[in-house]
Image (cartoon, rainbow, N blue to C red; front, top):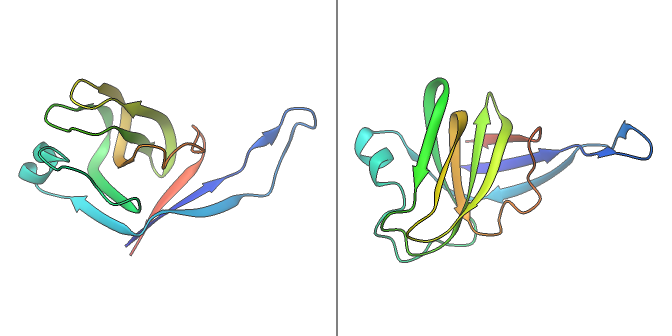
Length: 126
């Protein structure tokens, strides 16, 4: 499974979108698809590989929160609605909190989502 990021930035001076850029965000992807795996998330792990992603999928878009309790490393969190990025936030170890509207949330190693912006697309590919 992979996470594919597609961005198409608007050039402010031209007002025209650039051609979409595509890159792989993660190739080692887990899906938190049970209540237990969603509750645990990345808690109690010492680290994650650079190409790792944890995907939380929900039936519908709603306000969703994340916490970093018992997570000893920073992560990038990405909130999506129907594959479109609605929010990106770096969460600090142990004390970070984040929330946003999403039907999917992705947790990545800190720095992996540096060029991901609201309006971009992320696809989970089998």
